[in-house]
Length: 354
Image: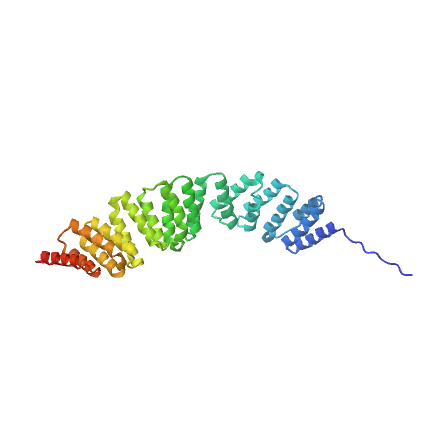
């Protein structure tokens, strides 16, 4: 008569523990933690057994930081937040370049009792020139919640030193200066950004408009705004901003003319640019030079000949005997088939040339 041998089956929670222990010995730490977590969810008392095993199991130096990470995560499963944090803090002290430890700390930022400790760990890392993504994402958000704009500004200044081509840092830094009501600094940062990322001009229109609402008469901010509009392929709006600049700052005509010259190369013979640059040159008594832009306006935008005529009349009022101006006015009337006015200005031109 045969006897049946009944195999003993481990309870489910113990199976998870044994599997976890086996995986730890194979250095499969995160896979082991999944099993440890399952057993702790069944009964928290198993957490102590797991911790004892982890502390007693010899691990080579290479894998020690990962083992410590699992120990901390077991503490967190047991709701022992301070004990788990202490393990992570010690891990950072011994292995300051262990990125996964910082990632784990970043996930704990919602725990109020750990918030200041995590902030201090991240600040210490920055001071040691450690710039992992989890630190960059979390630390400035802590400063903003605290309304500690000075620290946030310093942080992004350091980030720009590390990576001067990351345009998002400039946008955030400008916004921080704006919150501090340092509008000039906010504008200066956007000016730096437009140099490294001109393709982002569209995104800068709203922040620079925001700054101008606070300091509408600031000449350099207005010039920057005009530049941004031109780079965003909005030449009409750019010209409007230059006209507003001259309204507030008549002494800025030379700067405005130089900017318009540059934009005339970017937008050849654009009627608004031609009209405005000619008008400013007339006001600067550069009559002959202004005529080249007026002639271009007549040639390339004949529908604007009435505007060209008004500009020519301004020159004649200020310099009645300017022969070239008289000839161009005659040409405009010739195109408009206004024979009487055409002959009048041609005759004046001939009379002044004799």
